[in-house]
Amino acid sequence: MYSTELTLNSPIWIVRKFLMDPLFISGVSGHISILKFKDKQNNEYLMGDRIRELSTPTDEFIALYILLRTSKDFKYTEGIFKGPEVKMESIKYSGMSDDGKLEFTIEFMPKSLGDTQTRLYVATNVKYNDSLLDKILGKSAVDFAKHIVEDHFVTYARVYFPSLYGDIIKIFNTKGKPTQGLSVAPSLEFTGDAGSILNKINEMISQLDLGLIKVNFDKLSCNIVVQNSEMKRAICRSDSNVKTGFEALSMIISAKGQGKIEVYSVKIEDLMETLYALA
Image (tube, rainbow, N blue to C red; front, side, top):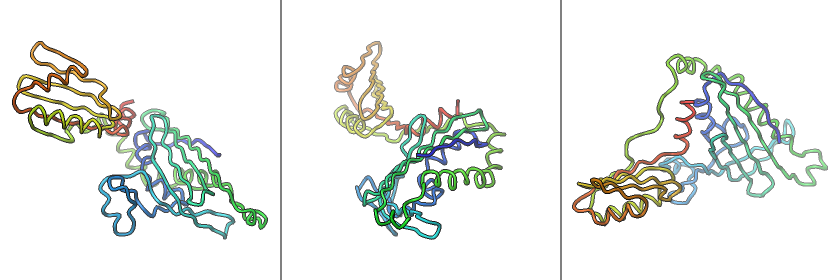
């Protein structure tokens, strides 16, 4: 494992945007070439001209790994590349070759130093089990962990990042940081009777990671908070009658006429970006 820290003249929300781009990370690493994109809707990998069929970003790929043995000797192996895995404090990527010899993680932990600077901690752990013959010949893998961090990511941050984006970042800093990054428009709207509304609620709860479902009938309004495909909170109001939890859903069953449902889906990455921008 190898780790280091560096300081970037950029607000943290911009740094996190770069780090959450798997195509950017694979390119800067210098040793990861993405070949196929995982279409999770159809559970298949897309390559060649079929990549254009991809409709939403994915976090799983088939990649070609370029392994440096000596300054003139390279080995290529194919495997899985995953990421970003986004948490509140870190952004992580991982991969493993099909033959099981290569396994690695790249983890970034940015910390705000104010409106204009970010301290970035980078940790890379690489395990590569070369063959006994290669070791006898003196061709065992070099210290990839240090090489990827110092010769690729740190060099990019030190040379290319300020040269390419320094002026743009100064404009952002001059105008001030964004105050909102979450969309308030509903991702789905549906109209129907009480039965169809309840069916749609159950369907949307199973699909939401984090979000809000709003239900409105003539004399009834409900808000349902969803987290990890589970109903975490529900409240329904009809005049002075207020019910919560599953009792609230019983009020929808008895609702008359046509109702409307609005679904607001929030990506945890967008939520964290907004929180960081406001910090």
